[in-house]
Amino acid sequence: MALGHHRKILQIVGYQNSGKTTVMEQLITQAKTEGLRVGTIKHHGHGGIPAIESSKDSARHEKAGASVTAVEGEGTLRMSIHQSNWQLADILAIYESIEMDIILIEGYKNEHFPKVVLLRQAEDQSLLQKVSNIVCVLYWPTYPLDKPLDYPTFLIHEKAQYMEVLMKEMRK
Image (cartoon, rainbow, N blue to C red; front, side, top):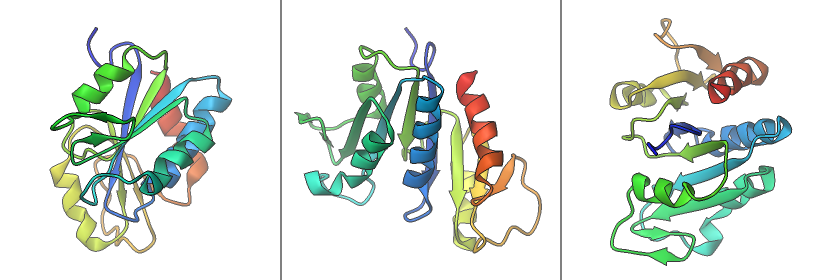
């Protein structure tokens, strides 16, 4: 079975403190409300092995209703499975055996799955050139949106509008 073929995969990407975990929580809660089973994977991009106490984002995913959660950093998958290096494909292969409708991925900017990009500051603009497969962009009032982008674009506070677009994407 090809990854992402029978279940929807959606990535949430952005730099630190851009709101990724909050958007993940919103999506998990809405999907669960609609009767969908959700799994989440978080990339611990701050360096080092994710400590149990630093897995607070995964705990937030679980509290929002995710059936399965994982956090990966520096070769450690916080499911207490260790090997020299973890690729996203390795983690997704583990998830293949668990019944889920949607897998939400926080981070892993260089992967090719459909993405929601969060922009908070002017310097975040470069992210749009670094990532592929953008579904939509969510931006903060602190981000200077000078011209229209080539993607559906929503102010971070326009939750109803972007949730409608993202839930439609996840139901495909």
